[in-house]
Amino acid sequence: TIAEGPNGFIWAGTWSHGLNALDPLTGATTRYSFGEQAGDLPECGIKDILFDREGRLWMATTEGLIRYHRADSTFSVYGQDIKNPGSIANKSVHCLLEGPNGKIFCGTNGGLSILDPETQQFENIRSEDSLRSEAIAGMEFDQKGNLWLATGNGLHCLNLKTRRVQIYDYEDGTPGNDYGLWSHHKGADGKLY
Image (tube, rainbow, N blue to C red):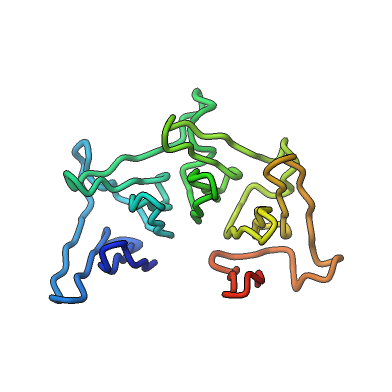
């Protein structure tokens, strides 16, 4: 996965070779390899990169949500802790999206996890909360503020105010029920594809 940072650097997350940053002006690259010490990037596959409105770098990985701290080049891992309901729903995170309120939305294999960066706590929305599938492969906000989820069992439209979910599948005219990673796009006109 590739993303442009606020300083113009190009960041590439890989499946097996860590995180790489390219300065397009000089051509210089920096590689952040996997390590086993506290603050190191853990061995993981990086599926998505997000820069939030504060310029913080977040990564969706096979080992949880990971944040890069630019000041000291360290990483924080937000992993699943089944004893802590305020932790992420599942360590396999597929996609990221920043909400209008600055919260970080994480599509995981265990449902939707919403991180409040201030409290460092997650709110989790799962199948018992009306999701038909907990495998979330993609997310986009529509122009009304609803969150659309591409899942392993249909498209889900989540009203964040009421927490009501409307599910659309093959019977409603969608091309199928199983949506894979990166099977979504928001056009410049606000339309969702």
